Length: 67
Image (cartoon, rainbow, N blue to C red; front, top):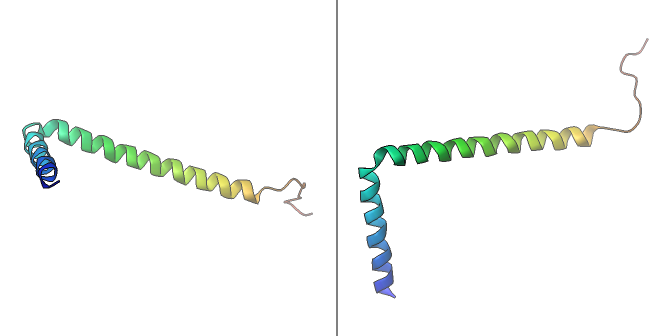
């Protein structure tokens, strides 16, 4: 089992070294992941506000302006 752990660590180190060679692609992937995370955060904010508004709605007609 130690051999497989060593192989995985070796492959991981090779990936880090190869990502230094392709720094522009690594940066582009990082920007894509950050944008995706921000997009998911915005979707969750909209969903939570929708749930709050859905809970506040009532089927009764209410007069907002009283004379």
